[in-house]
Image (cartoon, rainbow over all chains, first blue to last red; front, side, top):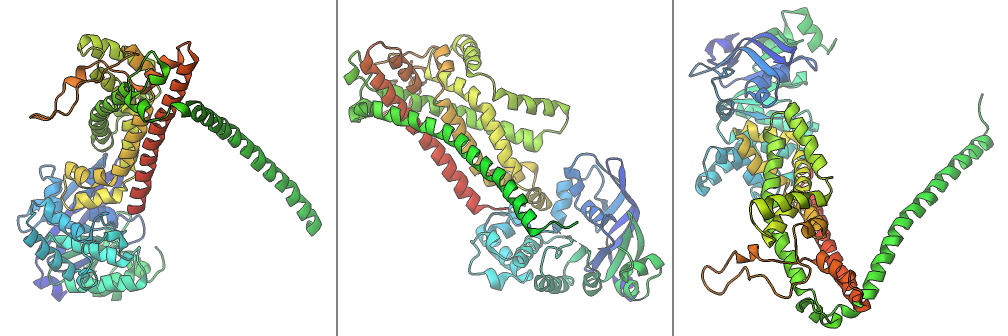
Length: 259
Length: 306
């Protein structure tokens, strides 16, 4: 519990309900997200963990019939990012996302990383060059691609593409990074490199990660929330969750008895 | 109860008989279609060959069959196609983008969508009548290249819209989400990503539409294209400043299929040769356009695979 004492709160979900049309996918979720920490969301398929993650950048606004209730407050300005008064684009400018399957644009490696910056109106070559390099270095991809920045991103391997997507999400210096099962489409070696990368990033970024892989949650995260049927069953320090969970259901899940 | 190997083999042989039979019947059906077309092409080329020389392309129509050419017809076709493309591409692409990316999905847009598809099947003469009333009389554009170009643009608009929508739809949702997640607005998402990535499909659709338009006769006759024209429209390019003029838009004109029609309706045998030769040229134009479309599709497919 010592970690949570010194950590500052970056965001907090308060009694969050979410509906896909009439279907209530999230039921009264309350969860803190601490600054410069990795928070993992685990749970069986369909438990709502991805749905919850996608609330943080208002991705649900893209599709009709979706509805939020409750709040997610984002610090330091303590704004409720789910409020209809807050432009989802503003939220997405502050909180970036890495998706389940690598989804680079069919553009060059350079343009993929630069796109988020271009959206923010940065078009000066020297600034872009520098930020693209820093982002690629942070994503541990620079050495592999520095000689072919203007090659198509599709020519990279799956793991490299995912690190490129991480670089793209990093380049804009986000306040929170959302990872939606970022390694589920990758082989074990690429997965290991992504996990290593997350470990390096956690001193500088706040990360919220959905994962199917419990070892992954145990390895990379500081805090873990176990979700089931749209509810948080248990939230605690990762160590505590994986060694001595409070709830029987959590223990059953992490020991592989269901899910 | 197990079947013996001999029984199984007999069974397979019987099944395979039907397999082969269908393959043969299918091949015959295919050949019936293809061979008839090829025979028509070959006949056309054989008949028209003696007329296919340089002067055929550089002469105006004439009362003497040997001296008659298709200069005014192919120039007319090119100019009309240019107007058609200029009108149909922006209208069609913008409409498709709106329908696909912006319009809310409700019963209104559903009705519009169904009707756009249906419009592609409206007989072209109906467009001709509509255009006669709208462009020629109401808007007083006369029996001009502009009227003809706009008429054909209306005709191919549904084709362009449908093709563009299909091209847009081929861009996966994950790419759209990637752009949105970086803070892009809808327009940034469309103009920076979806539109460039679907350009190959859009261009293919546009060219397919144009290659349909270039052979259209009925609507052009309806709006009153002349069948015998022994002069060229004003040149779009001028030697003096500002180097372009738009007088040609209002000039009378003829197009390739009308020139053909005119020659085929002549009693003299020699004019049939001219018609065949013009037919060969028109076919070559259409095939060339389709070839460009296929090439573009192939090239872009190779570059972008989702």
